[in-house]
Image (tube, rainbow over all chains, first blue to last red; front, side, top):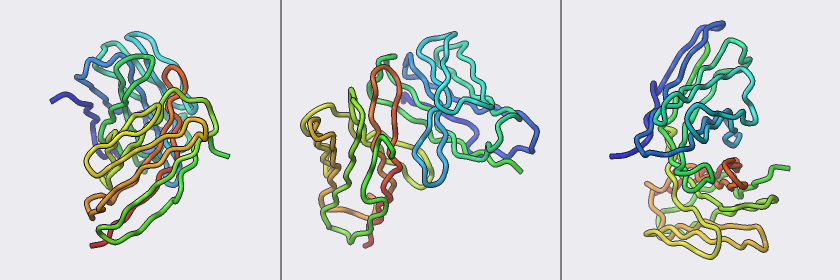
Length: 113
Length: 108
């Protein structure tokens, strides 16, 4: 079945360490997105990519980095520069850069210890 | 003020009741999405609509573009409908703007 796979589901990181969250999709979607969800707040856009080898900053990109070397994959790195990294991270994709129905992964809960 | 406002924030009802969740937005949109998030965290897209009304099983979504308002209805609610329901709007090319979500609890 087609879908989006995020891994791992739970992740613990020590302060000062970088960590990479995986997002893979086999839906042949051009556009992919990373969102952050904090308690009591709506999802906020971190980065998005419309095509391979291109990506744009979202509303809260500071302290994060991404790459889009393959259409299927859009990994997110949470760097040590991110001041409050503990959150729930969701990856999504849509068919075209113009939007359309969004498909979401199951999320990764990152905890900094 | 958030660009997308949902009400109520929390809703508890008895099994079988008719449920309505509201979403108002203040920006121009190309489409409105209703999403469902279960306790595990994964999100499922329920509807994407730009006008009128859509129905899927016991779920109905409506949108009034002039009033910038959408509603999600659940008929004959069931405990398995308990989840967070999220309204989001598409603005132009690629950005989704999300409401804060409505936590729905259906008691047996």
